[in-house]
Image (cartoon, rainbow, N blue to C red; front, side, top):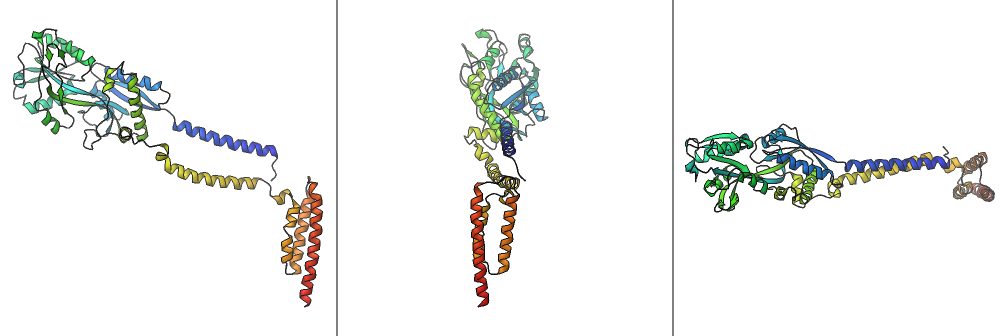
Length: 432
């Protein structure tokens, strides 16, 4: 099959365009944004606002593939439940949340510190002072587990201590109406939340609350892995008079950003990297982001770290060749096969020298060796037939190269001479 020059050019351009298009598609596919849904909830709505701010910043970052879609669940417990039901890819949850067996931590957002406060005017200085009193549990269900742990450790039920749930807007009225004599609240130690806590109480040294020490914090932390023993620094709640008046032992619980166990490792790594690189630009607006840290890598951690996040924090992020080494190897083999197929296809498409009739003098010259090696007149007859076919093919061509005419004549004369000589030699051999 004979192809014109322009047909060949069009074919080559088409193949190049196809290859370029496939490469561009592969690049766009590998760099496409990944949107993850994240459930966030807090008693004051700050959790959802924080994640929305982070999502906005990630969305405006050109080199980040991660996009976040925030689902506001109103409470931390709601976020944990949405995650457990499989409705979201990520969630901000406390370490003591239940039904998180399929969760893996990405980062520690902050720590919620247990503040068990004896309210002024009730003479509560320690756990013995809680006998017969009512403790208002701020946040209700989300703090049910930690209240149960304290009840079990200090036998508060036998001491006729009652727990009542309080929503955040109800706290001030409950204190003023003396419906509760103590408060149980779990809150991060940050300016925003400490200010909120201070505003529950008047600035009067005689009406200051008492922060109760959890002397059994170490034992509780050993028994319940979700909690940690923690020392609240002197003057954390108020500086003058200092509350507490010395470092005081209590409990704290980590607040995690968790991901599904099946979340792709590369995506988890990129999510972790995006958060850690973005938070620095947002600390001024959201100071609590300064508390973001790496999760525990221990196998017995309450919620194990996601392998993708662990790779980031350990500096073991795989390069593209580490991740796709096998694919590159097999791709190179496939490319070699395709190249061979393309070469074969091109050879099939392009006319052979015999079909083209190109360079007949060269083809005739190649016959000289066969003439010298011929051992019979029959072989010489076959060679002459082949020469006739070459000449016939050349003469049938519509376009011939005039520069080959002289060389063709010389080659024919030479072949005729060689054939004649070879016939004489064969005749002499036959006679002798």
